[in-house]
Amino acid sequence: MDDPRSVFYAHQDKQVIVYFEWQGPRGHHKFEGFWKDPAGKLVIVSDFQYEASTDQFAGYWTMLLSDGATPGIWTLEAHIDGESAGSHTFEVTSAPGASEATPARRLPSASELYGEMLKATVFVQKMSTNGDVAETHSGFFLENGMLVTAFEAIDGATRLRLILADGRKIESDKVLAWSRWQDWAILYVDSDKLPHLESAKPASWEVGDRCFFLDVASEGNRVIVDENITGKNEFPRAGLRLNVSFPSGRQAIGSPLVNEYGDVIGMIGGALIPGATSLDTVDLNLMGVPRAGATIVMRGGLAVPL
Image (cartoon, rainbow, N blue to C red; front, side, top):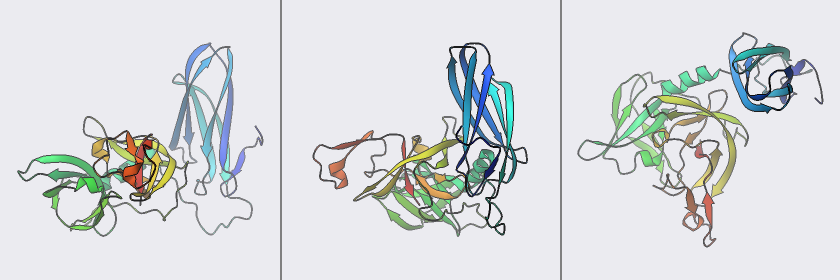
């Protein structure tokens, strides 16, 4: 430990590392760290697997410390194989000389993020000429009745049916703007009191940042995915894309990608070639990059920055 202490400054320190040593049986173990804020609410769960070759072993957990970290006494509870294995407390406070006029922004829990995203996210059903559902994607509301989705969610549709989180079904044919190559579309829905998400400041993200989106499970319900921005790339025709840790199912394309505060930083999807979302590799020549025979192998998922 380079700087062992128990007080950390939200505007100055970048991370908190808590280190434990134990004595126990050799073999395979699962370690879990439960980070709790000053109110005692579970904020982060970190886990890892470890093969102990001796009866003396150790482990550590890391929490990134943002400017908005709640000041007060935090606790990390350590668990091994589901059993309590100790806890450690530390204090988060304002940096010396930091302004006290602006209150720290509270970091919502994963459960709170899930609830807010769920209320503002809809299924977008592409209807065929005979009234059948041709394909299902996702979309999400921003303010003033604007619904953001992927272009492929509307491409070739006779009409669109939106299924809101409360079960309501709304048909829409009002497209305010769209881009086939950048893979986004904005619809307008004339309905009162629609739950919506807030937009993050432009380019407020960095590679390595933690983010969340809602995938669609095989049972049809939405599940929260905790991931990171792992890279970025600019394409001549498609524009900027974000690489994220995990790919999504097709029904989740068009879902919001939010930061740790629940602000929208992008949209899940971003096909590099219109209609080619499912490809594992992309021919750079089709993207307007003159490199004969060159391809990109897709890792994780893609998102379009908002």
